[in-house]
Image (cartoon, rainbow over all chains, first blue to last red; front, side, top):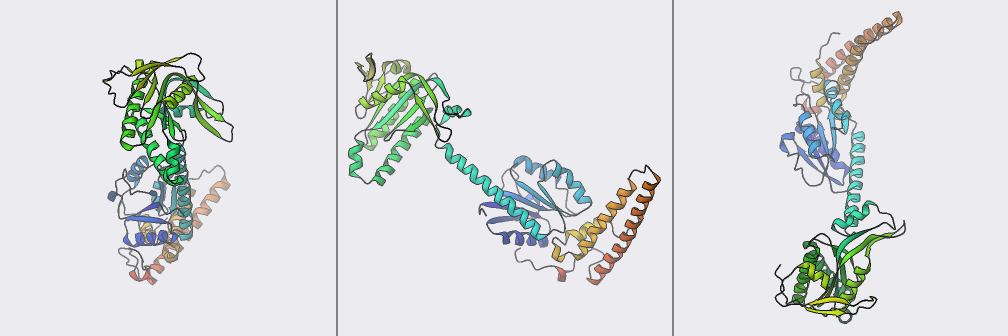
Length: 337
Length: 101
């Protein structure tokens, strides 16, 4: 059983409450919180891990209807099990079971084995549900961030859409020398720290990480301010890299990019493709350590006022017929947006 | 149908006997509630033929007899087990010793 499932027990009688706690504790793998009255808890802030609630209703108790309604409204996932006497109490609570505010209604005197069975089933179900949710969250971490996730509204292989985007590539310079100087494990830990820091900056500037590229990242930016934000982000990455003594080169281009899902029905992965992606990758490769090499189009659209004007140059890039006007931006260049 | 115990009193007896193994009076109380439900149901049944009337009357009469017998039984059991007849409190000697409070 999942040890993280909390069971709340409400019972106004200390005697029967202790019997219930004892019975549930025998199941193992779960923990209990016992209360004399519903007034002792805040429905919106139940103890962490609570998945199941057992209320032993006594004839002399106030009607639990209001409490159960509030509880189910605040905690719709909580499994609510109520134990009541046959007759009047049971008849009063039956409509709440039918409306879903009570998930299970047991009649007193209860069969302890039946109670144990019901609770165990629920705990197993809740455990499986939480495991699934946790796996789902873990899987989401493998997907691209931000608005790019919309592509997964139609997760069929071959599905692709065109978007105006700024493409940013980063690449750690001289990483082969670096990997030879350290163990593979140390290299991996360090690389993960650096790329993690870059990814955080990309998110901070509203960018979306598409994937890692060995010792760098591919990210895209959307929206009207995408060139401005991507350039600011590139500067922030270079500033951080300068402080960490791991030099980085960055390439930037802007234009229509095809985003889509590649693969088969058994295995798919997300990617962005197009001439602008290729060009940004090539510029990243050409950038010097500590340099941002961006197309002039990105610089113009970014509308920066640099303290030191970037060095502009028309570059013949492999795979592109026409020379590309570009700007070399050094980390010391300060922008005034 | 005449009653010695009110619905509320029966519920109170049941409330104190949460689980089967210490629930003998509660079992009787539970069946008394069931018999009251059966009796009330017969009173509300539709009578479309003469046979219907006879069937419902027979069931109601036997439910009332069974009810009277079980109420007497409950009365005797409470006496034997020395329940407090005023409060209908279960004697401490019958309570299982809770291991966790």
